[in-house]
Each structure stands twice: as C-alpha cells, then as structure tokens.
Amino acid sequence: MNLFMIGLKEDMKTELANFPKKECILGRVALEHKRMYRVWTEEGELLCEVSGKFSFESASREDFPAVGDWVILSSRKEEGTGTIHAILPRFSKFSRKAAGNTAEEQIVAANVDTVFLVNSLNDDLNVRRIERYLLLAWESGANPVIVLTKTDLCENVASKVAEVEAVALGVPIIPVSAELNEGLDKLKPYLEEGKTVALLGSSGVGKSTLTNSLLGEKKQAVKEIREDDDKGRHTTTHRELVLLPGGAVLIDTPGMRELQLWESQEGLAGAFSDIEELGGSCRFRDCRHTDEPGCAVREAIRSGILTEERLSSYNKLQKELAFIERKADKRAQIEEKKRWKAINKQIKTKKK
Ligand code: GDP
Ligand code: ZN
Image (cartoon, rainbow, N blue to C red; front, side, top):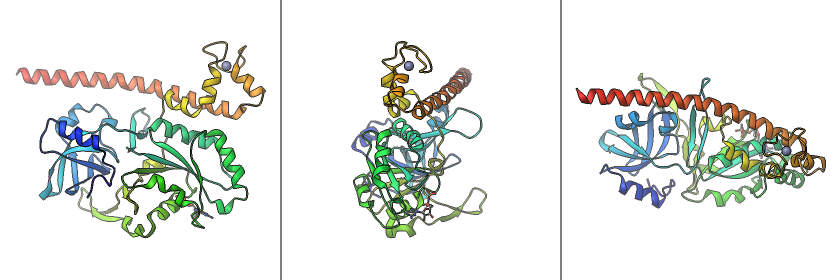
C-alpha cells in the first residue's frame, strides 16, 4: 500500500524520523473497535493496540486513536499485528459527545481535507440545518463543500442555490443528481489522489447513493468482510476508510452519520460571522441582542439585513455551547485529579 495515496504528507515522515523510538513505521487507522485498531501500513493491514506507556499517558478518550488518524507503530509483520506508540497531530477532526451523559469528546473522523455537506433539494431544504453543518465543518478544520442532491426533483435549482449562498458566503455549492448522473464531475477537484473526504448530512438526503456513485464499479470492494470477534464468533464488519477509484480516501464512520454538536466559540464565530460582526457595533460589549439600547443586531433585523430566525438559531447554539463547556470544565477537573493520583502511585512504587 502506497501511503501517499491514502493521504500521507511529507511532514509526517519528518515526525517519524524525529520519533525517539527506532524501527517504527507509519500507518493510518481504518477501523477502531474496543481499543483495537485496524491500521493501513506499507506492510499491509495490521491489527494494533496502543502501548502500555501510551495508555498510561492518555487521560481521556480523544487522546486515543480514531479513524483517519496517522499513527507511529512498531509492527510484528509475521503476526499481522502491531503496537501504536503515538498519534501524529490531527489537522482536522470531527467529534461528538460520547455516549452517556458526559461531556467527553469522541472523535469520529480525523484528518479530513474536505467535508461534503449533503442536503437534498426537494421540499425540505433547510438553510438553518446547513448553518449547523457549516458550524461543524468550520470547527473541525476540514473545508466544507455544500452538495445539493436530487436536482432532478427540483424545479428552481438556481433560487435554492441562491438561498443557500446567503448563509454560506464563500463556500462552494455543487448541485448534483445521482439519478441523472449530473454534476458529479464538479466534485472531482476534491477527490484527487491523497485527499481525504467525508460526508455529513441528514438521513435520506442521498449520502449512500452519492457514495456509491463515487465508488463507481468499485462498489463490490466495500462489501462487508466476515471476521472473528473476540469470542470466536463470525461477525460482519467493514473498513471505515474507503479507497475511491480516483485515489481519494472516503471516511465513512457511523459516528459521522450521527454527529452531535460539539463546538467552541471559534466555530460559532465562523458560521455566524455576520452576527458576530454586527455585535461588535452594539453599544454594550455584553449585549444579548434582546432589547438593549443601541443594539446593532436588532437594528439589522429591523432594516431587513438579518432575519429573526438566523438570530434565534445563533442564540440556541450559544446556549448549547455554554452547557457543553460547563460540563467539560467539570470533567477536566476530574481528569486532572486522576492523573495526579496515578503519578503519585507510580512515584511511590518506584521508591520501594
Ligand atoms: P442517505 O440516508 O443519506 O444515505 O440517503 P440514500 O442515499 O439512501 O437516499 C435516500 C433516497 O433518495 C433513496 O431512495 C435514493 O434512491 C434517493 N436519491 C438519492 N439521490 C437521488 C437523486 O439524485 N435523485 C433522486 N430522484 N433520488 C435520489
Ligand atoms: Zn446587540
């Protein structure tokens, strides 16, 4: 397997060369299951675990490898296994709240170059939803491209595109029809060899159909693979990295399909830059844009520059973010305590 084809960049080789442990190789995580990782390497696919040292030094879930991660590992080629020692810095990541009622971050896809925000052009095209997806994209570090599917079911494509443009300044918007095989060639620039893409969009908008079109005749190759689980039973599984015919890698994880909101103020500012900017001209610095005097945001609504709905989706998101942040703070305190406990314990055992 040629690693450049699956997204390796020159500086990653430098990272490997500078890594203190010798005789390691690079690989990309194709599947994660209960802290076991299928990793693509030049020596083929290896089943890997993280080293004891790695595990000890990892405080929380996002410190562990995720699908799409580049890792440094030592291989036991004969056994088809390996040990992961480090994760290379992620240039983008999609994450969500982990299962349960914690504010822990779970990374569902790492190192994505371009994310296709897939929306259907039929009746329920929802610009508010597109705003939310854009927010996720800006926060992730991946470049968003809005794909509007089912042009064959839409009579006023141009006006819908204009509607979307209004909330997505500067973002490429590509209308396609998988049914008529139209517009798909416009996606090509994002699908060159070594590029990594992912899809984000609600159920039913046409993500699977689009994936199949991108796969073309390679469709067969992603059929499920049967393998033994840890109890020796046969289970069907698949790789969550998919090599597309043109050479790009598609990340297709279940988590990507059910992404929940997990952002910081930074992402919010990107997706609602117009409101943030207007807010800068409010008379009061902590203006809540409700009924304060000299509020530039309310003024923009009165004069029709901004819609009431856009402001309320902005407010709704801010509330959610504040909630997540409060939880994350609490969690960080607990992690810190755990870490010190572990370190103290280690010091004590060393002294003996
Ligand atoms: P997903 O849930 O996002 O993966 O959506 P699917 O790919 O399963 O598509 C949902 C439905 O929309 C299916 O019945 C598809 O056949 C249909 N569909 C997808 N793309 C198109 C398109 O371009 N035109 C039309 N007319 N139907 C489409
Ligand atoms: Zn204001």
